[in-house]
Each structure stands twice: as structure tokens, then as C-alpha cells.
Figure (cartoon, rainbow, N blue to C red):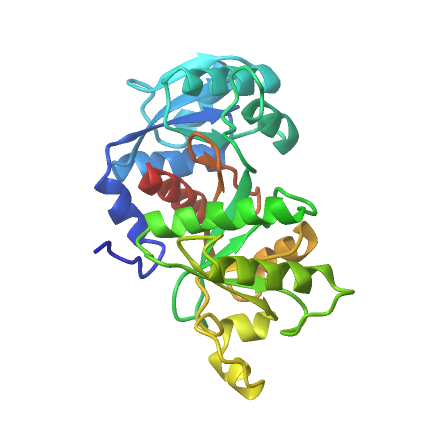
Length: 301
């Protein structure tokens, strides 16, 4: 039986049991990213390939206390070309993880989705965030908080399957997925409730596999057994969700930042559904969260 992670720091332990991953950093002239990469190197989980402005990278390596010897640096000062070169390198077997550095998200993702060398597989790429916070009894996945703006129903199924795949590879044999809506009943005028009910039925009929899906569930019902009990909700998922599937980016982004900034949650986040894990962190994420995101990607390799 796979070991279920108790906290985010367990990601490092899990990643150490894997082969050391080659992480390719796009526009690597980013001190916060280099510091996280340095910690991941010291933990023995990655070896870096740094793509970007080599002069700036060399200077920041010194500032970060990193020895440049043995670190591959590819000089490409233009961010879009750095992204293209990084993705091509991985597509040709030169890397196992892609990470965003000092480059805007849009050109970074364009390179990931490039038809010739891109890393997209069949289906939808999606953002997956794994949170640890004090008033929940286990790690909680949130998807999608950063990539898909208003996914259609079939895209939501892809997003759900992507998240389920991550949780299963982390040791949760049958993840419990709460499909979020404003209430626990179906209202034809509220699309999220209708989609939730459809996915729940598809799961019961084995059209969605490898997880246990229930919805619609409001947030309180998804993470609080007491709240679910007050409303008379009988569910294996309610109050014990491993994953919360949000209806759109507005909801996901607000939930992500609420857990991070109000509940002081720690997070590890990746883009999943690609040929390799893609680390795309926010500038506001802490160095520790960036390290945990690298560890999550390495643990999936």
C-alpha cells in the first residue's frame, strides 16, 4: 500500500525515493526561484538546467550562495525564446520538470502548448494546488485556481481526472472529490450545481473512475462533517474531501488565496496533464511553497 502524505514536508521524503529529476527553469534570472531550486538541490531531489540571461543568472547564483560549477546554463536572454528552448529540450529528453522563472505566464504557457515541441497531451492542462492548513485534518487539493477560466463540462472532467491522478500517485488510493457549488441541491439555473450532479452520477456509473465524487456541495459541507450533519447530508465525501473541484477561475483563485493568506496555508502547486510536471508558482508564494512545488513535481516523476 502506498504511504499517504501527512504534510507537505513529506513530499521531500517521497521525492528522495525517486530518481533525481532534471528541472529546466525558464528565464532563470529570478532569485526567489533560484533559492528554492538551491534548497531542492541540497535535498537531493533535482539537478537544474537554467535557461535565460547567463550574466544575470551567474550573478544571482552567487547571491543565492550556489556554486555555478556543475550547473548547466543555457544563454537565451529573450524570455519567449528561453521558453521555447526549454520546452524543446524537455521534449527531446533533456529534462523531467519544467519551471517558470522571470517570464510572464502567457508566453510560458504558449511554449508549453506549442504544437511542434509542446508538452500538451490529449485532454486539458490544469492547475493543481495541494494545501496544508491548521483547521483541516489532512492535505487538501484545489483545482483549478490558475489556468482554466470558465471550463466547459468536458474540460471539468479532464481537470477532475488530472487532480485524481496526482492524488493517487501521492498515495491516496481513491481520492474523495467534492464538486463545489453554492448549495447542496441541484438548481437548473446554477450551472455549477447541474455539472456537479452530472459528474456524481457519471462516477456512480463508472464513467469517471479511480475516485469518489459527490456534489453539488457547498464549501462548508465539503470540508466540515459538522456542517454536513446539520444539513442532513449523508455522504462519504462531505467533511472529508481530498480534492475540491471549483467551477471557475474566479472561485478557485479566491479560494486559493483565502487559504494561503487568511488560513496561513502552505501550498505546493503544479500544472498537470502535460507530458511532464510544470511548476508555475506565484510571485507572492513563499520560498518554502516554491520548494514544496518543486518537491511535488519531483515526487510525481
